[in-house]
Length: 598
Image (cartoon, rainbow, N blue to C red; front, side, top):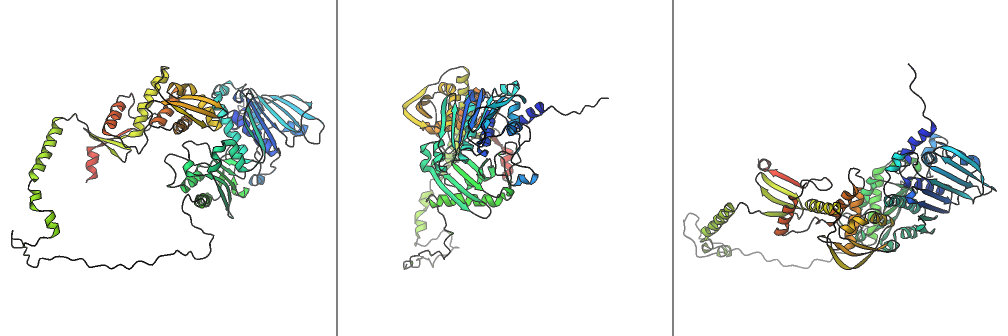
């Protein structure tokens, strides 16, 4: 029997590796920008065409490479960053595995032009699907120019599953922001199809954040500055009153490397406890500096998931740092731990109060065994509840019997009441039905919106005075992606240049009167449904719109509103679950209720 185990060709192995490192065009942008940063560039320019599907070009003025280094850089596991395993615990650069360029070249047509400062000529290398086709001298400026063309041209299935241009552009902008924020001392620019998205001059961290997210964030930034023997924390946290319903302005960096860290995110949110508007998240741009040996950045191919040696202690330090910043700006009370003296709290001497003992009237002649005989002396309590007040108790009973008789006579009458302005309760034959009011309204709206979108039928609109809004560039492209659908649902939107939009109409039946807030919720809801591959584009927009337009928790509903919501819910094809698959209805049976009293 012949042997069946064999080594994979390099080209196939590179394509497999590319599946982990290069997931979409934004992955290429991230890897090439980080290489430019590691090369010591002070100017980095990113040009993309057709959302990176046709071209991704990154130009820098960094150190450049020799001919030999240029050729070796495309080999797997070729790196100048580490030589031994111990070097993994002292990494201060972005890339170090030597997988990125090999993976990019395996799934695209890649061209590199590079020249070192002291060299007269540069080197050009052209690689198609891991195969080197050209390697020759060329004339080029100092630094490197990477041009990645026709991404995934040799993997049709991967290219087929790329999203729309607006979606891919949004991911590219997000990766661009992560690198640009981490390095405010470098000039960055981003261009898409000959249009400029960003042109960020070198400057301070505050200037970089304003350059990326707009001037409206200027007065929202509270400075963080905490130094400990374990970690140093600096950066900015947003004011709670400016917290938004959308994510996108939350960034963690460790040693200037972007990271995702849900555990530390909870520490930040904990610092804002009881001062955040409901369903909002604050902005933050938090930089941590620590000993590279105390973190592990080698647990994920994209190097964004980082493990810390002492996460619990850092959690506490981070929460305290954010709270201190909030307290310093009088947003919440804070204690001054820097004052080593005894804290003196001035106390006014209490006013002299004369307390008179209460006078109690006692009937010394009262005999409890004397039957109905009473003393003429009556206390105030007795006077307030004289026998005459209870002479008509039979009338109370008769009215209750009448109400019971009426209810029995008309069993079709329904009674609803709210619990904590969140749930609607009503009795049913088997027990007590509880309805989540927000999810119920989402289901009703979802099916209505879905019908409009499926049948290309527009709904009525509420016209209003124009409301101008400046969007984050990433959210701008989300809006462009769903523009057609939300116009069918009732939005009237025009574009004012840059990332500015003007809203002149809202969908009818919306419970939110603020156009900016409604659009913010819509965009966040839509982004949250993007990860579900089983949901089509129309369903995602309808689901997002329902989430943005539904009644919020905490709203008091009238009896007629509860009745209408009940009727509309049970007219739906799927009343039991919200558009996101969460339960809408639950019933407490009589048996379950009886058990509570045993």
